[in-house]
Amino acid sequence: MDRTRLIQFGAVVLAAAAVVAILIAVSSGGGPDTKSVAAGQIADAGDSYSLLGGLPQSGLTLGRAKAPVTLVEFNDMQCPICRDYASAVFPTLVQRYVRTGKLRMEMRLQAFLGPDSVTAGKAVAAAARQNSAWTFADIFYGNQGQENSGYVTPDFVRSVAAATPGLNHARLTRDAAAPGATQALRDGSAAFNAHGLTGTPSFLVGRTGGPMTVLRFSALSPEQFTTQIDQLLE
Amino acid sequence: MTDRALRNAALALALAGVGIASYLVYVHYSGTEPICSISHGCATVQKSSYAKLAGVPVALIGLLGYVAILASLFARGATGRMAGAGMALVGLGFSGWLTYLEAERIHAWCQWCVGSAVVMTLLAVVLAWRFVTDHP
Picture 1: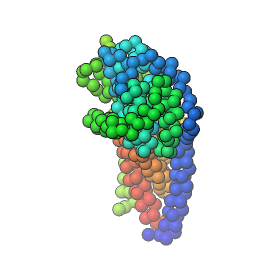
Picture 2: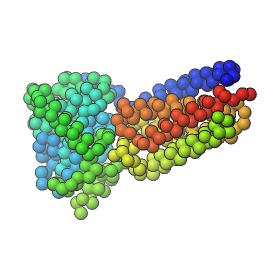
Picture 3: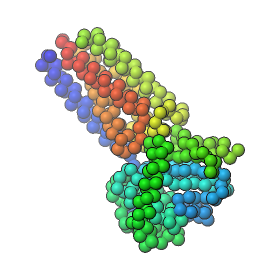
Picture 4: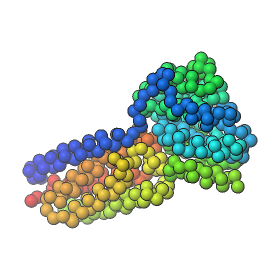
């Protein structure tokens, strides 16, 4: 092997490494927002009130119990795409179908992104015991911080709870530490694995009480969801 | 292995890469869901915030990379070989980063992206070997 050529190759490797480092630096900027939310600085709660106010919530279920169609959402509270779904698709589904009694939604909590996911998931499970899981989760998404940055502190949870109408924070803290919250995460994970799902958010949809199928979507546009729900409502 | 064999292997790999990247570019711009045996993991990856680099779809950058590597195979002399090896090494490094993102940040797998990473890895090995064993 030619020594000069090996030296040239070393230079090529170094140049390639420099280019890759630049690409990675640019790509990292495409990740989740790096905002952090201090206690008492909860934003976007007003949108959640107007969207979900007056709708029946029971445990991890949103909407009329006898609604003809059920949509099951598998979500991790830290997942930025779950947040994007919550802002880009969820409001349309709530206004068009949940408010009109045609759709009920169920949440299956996941917590595989990191410790903040576990803390957040248990908080939502605890909010479910006060029938406020969906409002709590929607406000949480509106204030979601950088993944695994440790932003889901007791103060952060307290602030989201304080912004959630009718939610007792002391009780939420107790329930989040109780075995029931851990069990809710285990149940969510078991359901996720049972359906062979690989990422969040994932969805199952079907006639209420009937077989559920995975809802396929390629973009977070309401139409990709409404088309399939409309077919089930026909 | 002869230079001709290495060039032919690189040609086949680059064409495979062009095929995969073209499909992902089509999926990106058509808004359709990629054919994926992993429950919409491909869609999750494709619609993640990492699917674009400075506003340009990563799939399109990959396609341009494969085309450039393909073009380098038709260039004569050491400069073409060096360019091919350099671009494949950049592709290898960036594919590694994207695979890390799938595993650690997006938590979903796109088999087309993994396939492209495998092709790019093989291309980097073949083109690096072709470059260092080329005697001027």
